[in-house]
Amino acid sequence: MSDSVSKSGKAAGMAFVTGGSRGIGAAICRQLAADGYAVAVGYGHNEAAAQSVVAAIRDAGGTAEAVHVDVSELDSIDDRIGEAEAALGRLSVLVANAGVTGEARRVDEQSLGNIEDVFRVNAVAPIACAQAAVRRLSTRHGGQGGAIVIMSSVAAHSGGAGGLATYGASKGAMETFILGLGKEVADEGIRVTGVAPGIIDTDMPPDELREAAETVVPMGRLGKPAEIADAVSWLVSDRASFVTGESVTVSGGR
Image 1: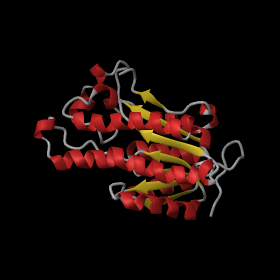
Image 2 (image 1 turned 30 degrees about the vertical axis):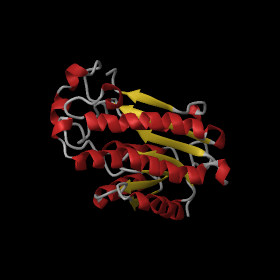
Image 3 (image 1 turned 90 degrees about the horizontal axis):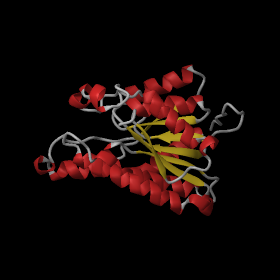
């Protein structure tokens, strides 16, 4: 078991990040490692990509391990966090980042299977992750407190353009959950927050949305994964010690 040390010299603990092998998740893993956390790089399918993130963190002097966690397998989430704790130390931070857009189609043209899959990964899985984290972090359960960050989206507020109404609805559910859970555990040493990215330069946004960024984003560009990671870094730090139950929008003004 290894202890991670922050820039201040204090033990930072372990950060568990789902969907950590690429895009926004990989940027979050690298940033939290730079902040002093031992990072569990959660991945669902691409082990090679997760190991690449781990290697980059270790090359920079940080501590990380790749952890296979398919968030659609809800019953396995608690065990995967336990495995990460065995390897990297006590959980301090959970970032529920894994998500899917699903079929970019009108609702009446989608399969019920797609709707169920989107909500399972984007809504039910983050709640299951948060449940497992609360049982470890809450002072009510003998924990030492910590932070939970759930990835939302501007689609939670816009409704999801271009056939992404189901996706937007799943993220809207998370906005409500962030507020509700934040209130539930506020006096148990846990802060619960979210980040709602706009159009970010990853492989997730549809091509037409990426191409429209110059006109639909007031700042006239795609966001960078590192800009989302910076928001997460702030939210889990003592600099945001009086922030809970809130979701921060990082969207270039969109």
